[in-house]
Image 1 (tube, rainbow, N blue to C red):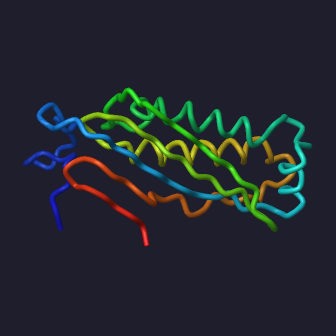
Image 2 (spheres, rainbow, N blue to C red):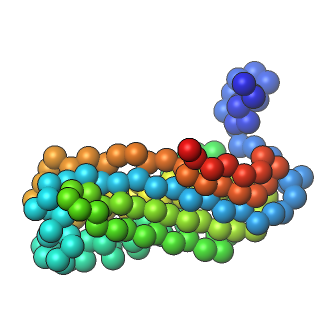
Image 3 (cartoon, rainbow, N blue to C red):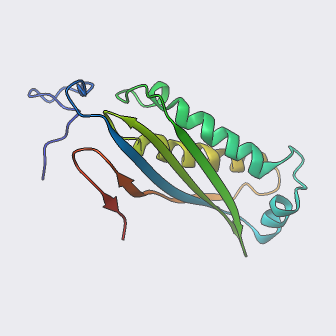
Amino acid sequence: MSRLSHLDAQGQAHMVDVGDKDETARIAVAEGCVVMQAATLAIVRDGDARKGDVLGTARLAGIMAAKRTSELIPLCHPLMLSKVSVELTPAAPDAVEIEAMVKLTGQTGVEMEALTAVTVAALTVYDMCKAADRGMRIESVRLVHKSGGKSGEFQAA
C-alpha cells in the first residue's frame, strides 16, 4: 500500500505541496443517489414540492459546493475550476440519481470537488423533501472516473 500523501514523516496531517507538479487537464466524475418513497419521487418529478424546484436547487447547491470544497475539507487546495456540472435524474420507482463532473487544468485533482458536489446536491434533495419523507437515504456516493495527473486514469468497476 502506498503512503498517505497528507501525512508527514511523523504522521502529522499537512497540506501536500503541489508546486512542483505539472499542470495537466484533470477530470473527476462522482455519483450517488437519494432513495425515497415513490410518492416523494412523484412530488420531485412533478415539481410539486412546497420549497420549490428540487432538482434545479440541488443542481445549483452541488455546483456551489464544488467551488467551495477547500473551505469544507481541511487539506484540499483552493482551485480555479473550469467546469462543474451536476445532473439529477428521477429514477423510478424511488430514487433521484446524481452525477457530478468537475474539470480544470492544474496541479492537483478534482475528485474531492466532484464528491462534494454529489453529496451536497443529495443533502439539498433531502432538505427540500424532508417534510414529505424523513426516511430518505443518501446512498452509493463514490468516485466513478478520474483522469489526469501523475496517477493517470481511474475507472470504477
